[in-house]
Image (tube, rainbow, N blue to C red; front, side, top):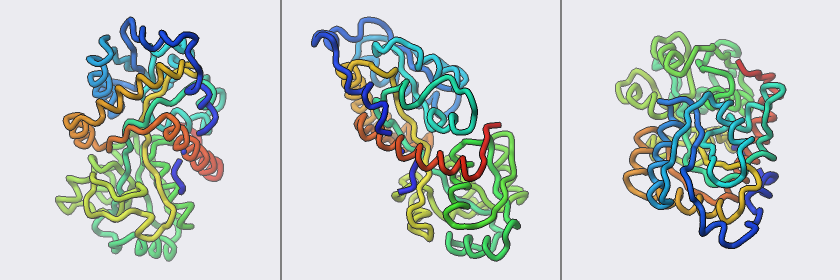
Length: 318
């Protein structure tokens, strides 16, 4: 599977409490969840998690909105006591491949708690493009190398990686046109300035329903409830393809296993509530809630794929 997935760093998950009572006495003060800027998808998910676990833990959960790199650094340097959490996505492990002198090590400085949600992208084309399937798109791109353009925002987003992985696996030459953000990138596709894009279901579904865009496939390994009826890219012509945003909770490495287990238990319990599931789905994310070990393996796999992709394509952050 070509999904971007860790086994190193799991030592932090399996560290033992010095005393069995440590988990019983935890937590004794407010928790802080560091995430990216207010108003984005991670902020919404962090607030749902915080609200979902505060009651069970008996402590307030404070959301700390920062530039994502500042949030990552803050948690990497925090005491491993379960009071400082990071909620974020692939940037944690992809940015070090694109930028020199990053102030954290994704494998050594963090321990995974759980994957909260995945966000697949949808491969969409402008209706003027004479293709109605992934196979037809690949055939057209091979017949017209360098003639098709795709829109994407900042380097290193899953929208960018989804397209570059598609190019690599399909062996096609489609050209990236850079836009300052996801909304301008979508508007460019709607205007016919570019021919295709890989965007979130929440951003493109209204335009697909109105006929202004044509959806070909979803980038997850399995069909997505966010885009009912759409095939996967893998099943529609590119076997093994998978590219999604992995949004999860991590804590500083060496956080006691009993505390990681308690956090995992409460977060998963919150994710199983219908109202939380509905809020996540309406925001374009599919709730998960897996084990720390499963999340670690997914990150390890994702790192392997994205690391090779970044190196082969010469991608640098912008």
